[in-house]
Length: 256
Image 1 (cartoon, rainbow, N blue to C red):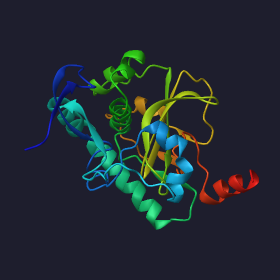
Image 2: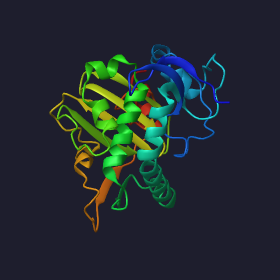
Image 3: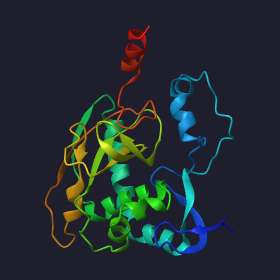
Image 4: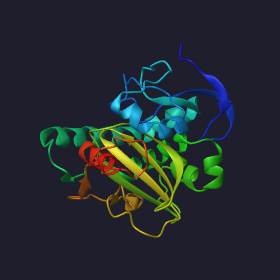
Protein backbone atom coordinates (compact mmCIF):
# COMPACT_ATOMS: atom_id res chain seq x y z
CA UNK A 1 0.00 0.00 0.00
CA UNK A 2 1.28 3.46 -0.86
CA UNK A 3 2.06 5.80 2.00
CA UNK A 4 -0.02 8.94 2.34
CA UNK A 5 -0.07 12.02 4.55
CA UNK A 6 -2.93 14.36 5.41
CA UNK A 7 -2.35 17.87 4.13
CA UNK A 8 -3.24 20.59 1.63
CA UNK A 9 -2.85 19.56 -2.00
CA UNK A 10 -0.72 22.16 -3.79
CA UNK A 11 -2.84 22.03 -6.95
CA UNK A 12 -6.48 21.74 -5.91
CA UNK A 13 -5.77 23.40 -2.52
CA UNK A 14 -8.09 20.99 -0.70
CA UNK A 15 -7.23 19.11 2.49
CA UNK A 16 -6.85 15.48 1.47
CA UNK A 17 -4.64 12.45 1.81
CA UNK A 18 -1.48 13.37 -0.10
CA UNK A 19 0.50 10.89 -2.16
CA UNK A 20 4.22 10.98 -2.87
CA UNK A 21 4.85 13.02 -6.02
CA UNK A 22 8.15 12.33 -7.76
CA UNK A 23 9.83 15.64 -8.67
CA UNK A 24 10.68 15.36 -11.55
CA UNK A 25 8.41 12.52 -12.74
CA UNK A 26 9.49 9.03 -11.78
CA UNK A 27 9.74 7.97 -15.42
CA UNK A 28 12.17 10.81 -16.18
CA UNK A 29 15.19 9.09 -14.60
CA UNK A 30 13.89 9.60 -11.04
CA UNK A 31 12.97 6.05 -10.11
CA UNK A 32 15.78 4.94 -7.81
CA UNK A 33 17.49 8.23 -7.00
CA UNK A 34 19.27 8.32 -3.64
CA UNK A 35 19.54 11.66 -1.89
CA UNK A 36 19.88 13.52 1.41
CA UNK A 37 17.36 16.00 2.78
CA UNK A 38 19.18 19.06 4.11
CA UNK A 39 18.03 22.33 5.60
CA UNK A 40 18.60 24.86 2.81
CA UNK A 41 20.25 27.47 5.04
CA UNK A 42 22.61 24.83 6.41
CA UNK A 43 23.42 23.64 2.88
CA UNK A 44 24.06 27.16 1.60
CA UNK A 45 26.20 28.07 4.62
CA UNK A 46 28.46 25.03 4.28
CA UNK A 47 28.19 24.43 0.52
CA UNK A 48 31.96 24.23 -0.05
CA UNK A 49 32.40 21.58 2.65
CA UNK A 50 29.47 19.50 1.41
CA UNK A 51 30.72 19.68 -2.19
CA UNK A 52 34.34 18.74 -1.42
CA UNK A 53 33.22 15.96 0.94
CA UNK A 54 34.81 17.32 4.10
CA UNK A 55 31.34 17.61 5.65
CA UNK A 56 28.85 14.76 5.49
CA UNK A 57 25.06 15.10 5.89
CA UNK A 58 23.82 13.96 9.28
CA UNK A 59 20.43 12.91 7.91
CA UNK A 60 19.86 9.42 6.56
CA UNK A 61 20.07 8.81 2.84
CA UNK A 62 16.65 8.70 1.19
CA UNK A 63 15.92 6.46 -1.77
CA UNK A 64 13.16 5.71 -4.24
CA UNK A 65 13.28 8.99 -6.14
CA UNK A 66 13.30 12.66 -5.22
CA UNK A 67 9.89 14.06 -4.33
CA UNK A 68 7.45 15.04 -1.61
CA UNK A 69 3.94 14.48 -0.29
CA UNK A 70 2.36 17.43 -2.06
CA UNK A 71 -0.52 16.23 -4.27
CA UNK A 72 -3.73 14.33 -3.74
CA UNK A 73 -4.41 11.17 -5.72
CA UNK A 74 -6.52 12.97 -8.33
CA UNK A 75 -4.01 15.76 -8.99
CA UNK A 76 -1.10 13.33 -9.07
CA UNK A 77 -2.97 11.20 -11.61
CA UNK A 78 -3.92 14.30 -13.60
CA UNK A 79 -0.28 15.31 -14.12
CA UNK A 80 0.67 11.75 -14.94
CA UNK A 81 -1.99 11.35 -17.60
CA UNK A 82 -1.73 14.82 -19.15
CA UNK A 83 1.87 16.04 -19.08
CA UNK A 84 4.41 13.47 -17.94
CA UNK A 85 4.67 11.62 -21.24
CA UNK A 86 6.06 14.62 -23.14
CA UNK A 87 8.41 15.56 -20.28
CA UNK A 88 9.73 11.98 -20.25
CA UNK A 89 10.17 11.94 -24.02
CA UNK A 90 12.21 15.14 -24.13
CA UNK A 91 14.26 13.92 -21.14
CA UNK A 92 15.18 10.81 -23.09
CA UNK A 93 16.03 12.77 -26.23
CA UNK A 94 18.19 15.22 -24.28
CA UNK A 95 20.00 12.50 -22.35
CA UNK A 96 20.73 10.67 -25.59
CA UNK A 97 22.22 13.77 -27.22
CA UNK A 98 24.33 14.66 -24.18
CA UNK A 99 25.68 11.11 -23.98
CA UNK A 100 26.49 11.14 -27.70
CA UNK A 101 28.37 14.45 -27.47
CA UNK A 102 29.50 14.64 -23.83
CA UNK A 103 32.14 17.37 -24.22
CA UNK A 104 29.87 19.81 -26.04
CA UNK A 105 28.72 22.93 -24.18
CA UNK A 106 25.85 23.90 -26.47
CA UNK A 107 23.37 21.72 -28.31
CA UNK A 108 20.87 22.38 -31.09
CA UNK A 109 18.24 19.80 -31.95
CA UNK A 110 14.69 19.32 -33.23
CA UNK A 111 11.85 19.03 -30.69
CA UNK A 112 8.90 19.08 -33.10
CA UNK A 113 7.64 15.72 -31.81
CA UNK A 114 7.12 17.14 -28.30
CA UNK A 115 3.88 18.79 -27.24
CA UNK A 116 5.60 21.87 -25.83
CA UNK A 117 2.46 23.19 -24.15
CA UNK A 118 2.26 20.02 -22.05
CA UNK A 119 5.99 20.16 -21.42
CA UNK A 120 5.93 23.68 -19.99
CA UNK A 121 2.84 22.89 -17.90
CA UNK A 122 4.78 20.03 -16.31
CA UNK A 123 7.64 22.45 -15.56
CA UNK A 124 5.26 24.88 -13.84
CA UNK A 125 3.80 21.95 -11.87
CA UNK A 126 7.32 21.12 -10.67
CA UNK A 127 7.78 24.66 -9.36
CA UNK A 128 4.38 24.54 -7.64
CA UNK A 129 5.22 21.25 -5.95
CA UNK A 130 8.69 22.46 -4.96
CA UNK A 131 7.37 25.37 -2.89
CA UNK A 132 4.96 25.71 0.03
CA UNK A 133 1.24 26.36 -0.40
CA UNK A 134 1.65 30.13 0.00
CA UNK A 135 3.68 30.27 -3.22
CA UNK A 136 0.68 30.08 -5.54
CA UNK A 137 -1.28 32.45 -3.33
CA UNK A 138 1.43 35.07 -3.72
CA UNK A 139 1.96 34.28 -7.40
CA UNK A 140 -1.48 33.63 -8.95
CA UNK A 141 -2.13 32.20 -12.38
CA UNK A 142 0.24 29.24 -12.12
CA UNK A 143 -2.29 26.71 -10.85
CA UNK A 144 -4.88 27.80 -13.41
CA UNK A 145 -2.35 27.33 -16.21
CA UNK A 146 -1.56 23.78 -15.08
CA UNK A 147 -5.12 22.64 -14.36
CA UNK A 148 -6.50 23.79 -17.73
CA UNK A 149 -4.69 21.55 -20.21
CA UNK A 150 -5.86 23.63 -23.21
CA UNK A 151 -5.01 27.05 -21.81
CA UNK A 152 -2.20 29.06 -23.40
CA UNK A 153 -2.48 31.79 -20.79
CA UNK A 154 0.48 32.10 -18.47
CA UNK A 155 0.60 35.65 -17.03
CA UNK A 156 3.27 37.88 -18.58
CA UNK A 157 5.01 38.36 -15.22
CA UNK A 158 6.37 34.80 -15.52
CA UNK A 159 9.25 33.78 -17.79
CA UNK A 160 10.61 30.26 -18.04
CA UNK A 161 14.20 29.44 -18.96
CA UNK A 162 15.92 26.16 -19.69
CA UNK A 163 19.39 24.63 -19.91
CA UNK A 164 20.93 21.16 -20.02
CA UNK A 165 22.79 19.60 -17.11
CA UNK A 166 24.89 16.48 -16.60
CA UNK A 167 27.19 17.49 -13.73
CA UNK A 168 26.71 18.70 -10.19
CA UNK A 169 23.88 18.69 -7.71
CA UNK A 170 20.11 18.92 -7.73
CA UNK A 171 18.59 22.37 -7.26
CA UNK A 172 15.32 22.32 -5.39
CA UNK A 173 13.08 24.80 -7.21
CA UNK A 174 12.48 26.86 -4.07
CA UNK A 175 11.67 30.56 -4.39
CA UNK A 176 14.81 32.69 -3.97
CA UNK A 177 15.36 36.43 -4.09
CA UNK A 178 18.57 37.33 -5.92
CA UNK A 179 20.36 40.65 -6.27
CA UNK A 180 20.85 40.33 -10.03
CA UNK A 181 17.64 38.65 -11.23
CA UNK A 182 15.04 39.37 -8.53
CA UNK A 183 12.62 36.59 -7.59
CA UNK A 184 13.42 33.26 -9.21
CA UNK A 185 12.93 29.55 -8.72
CA UNK A 186 15.59 27.22 -10.11
CA UNK A 187 15.07 23.49 -10.46
CA UNK A 188 17.83 21.20 -11.71
CA UNK A 189 17.66 17.47 -12.21
CA UNK A 190 19.61 15.82 -15.01
CA UNK A 191 19.30 16.31 -17.92
CA UNK A 192 17.47 19.63 -17.38
CA UNK A 193 17.71 22.86 -15.49
CA UNK A 194 14.79 25.32 -15.36
CA UNK A 195 14.46 28.85 -14.03
CA UNK A 196 11.13 30.54 -13.34
CA UNK A 197 11.75 34.29 -13.40
CA UNK A 198 9.12 36.49 -11.77
CA UNK A 199 8.51 40.19 -12.52
CA UNK A 200 11.83 40.62 -14.29
CA UNK A 201 11.53 42.32 -17.72
CA UNK A 202 15.20 41.63 -18.51
CA UNK A 203 16.31 38.50 -20.30
CA UNK A 204 18.60 36.01 -18.56
CA UNK A 205 21.12 35.87 -21.35
CA UNK A 206 22.93 32.67 -20.33
CA UNK A 207 19.76 30.60 -20.63
CA UNK A 208 17.23 29.76 -23.34
CA UNK A 209 13.89 31.46 -22.87
CA UNK A 210 11.18 28.85 -23.47
CA UNK A 211 8.20 30.92 -22.27
CA UNK A 212 6.72 30.83 -25.77
CA UNK A 213 6.18 27.09 -25.39
CA UNK A 214 2.87 28.25 -23.89
CA UNK A 215 1.82 29.32 -27.40
CA UNK A 216 2.29 25.84 -28.86
CA UNK A 217 -0.70 24.72 -30.92
CA UNK A 218 -1.18 20.94 -30.69
CA UNK A 219 -3.49 20.99 -33.70
CA UNK A 220 -0.81 22.43 -36.01
CA UNK A 221 1.66 20.10 -37.70
CA UNK A 222 5.13 21.51 -37.09
CA UNK A 223 7.71 20.34 -39.63
CA UNK A 224 10.59 21.40 -37.40
CA UNK A 225 11.14 23.17 -34.09
CA UNK A 226 14.81 23.76 -33.38
CA UNK A 227 16.02 24.60 -29.90
CA UNK A 228 19.49 25.66 -28.77
CA UNK A 229 20.44 24.89 -25.17
CA UNK A 230 23.62 25.56 -23.24
CA UNK A 231 24.85 22.90 -20.84
CA UNK A 232 25.88 24.02 -17.37
CA UNK A 233 27.17 22.30 -14.23
CA UNK A 234 25.48 22.95 -10.89
CA UNK A 235 28.28 22.25 -8.44
CA UNK A 236 27.11 24.64 -5.70
CA UNK A 237 23.46 25.02 -4.60
CA UNK A 238 23.41 28.76 -5.25
CA UNK A 239 20.85 29.81 -7.91
CA UNK A 240 22.31 30.96 -11.23
CA UNK A 241 25.81 29.76 -10.32
CA UNK A 242 27.14 27.75 -13.27
CA UNK A 243 30.85 27.65 -12.45
CA UNK A 244 32.71 24.41 -13.05
CA UNK A 245 35.21 22.93 -10.58
CA UNK A 246 38.16 24.73 -12.17
CA UNK A 247 36.42 28.10 -11.99
CA UNK A 248 35.41 27.51 -8.37
CA UNK A 249 38.96 26.52 -7.41
CA UNK A 250 40.39 29.59 -9.14
CA UNK A 251 37.96 31.79 -7.21
CA UNK A 252 38.97 30.18 -3.91
CA UNK A 253 42.68 30.56 -4.72
CA UNK A 254 42.23 34.23 -5.54
CA UNK A 255 40.84 34.83 -2.04
CA UNK A 256 43.87 33.32 -0.30
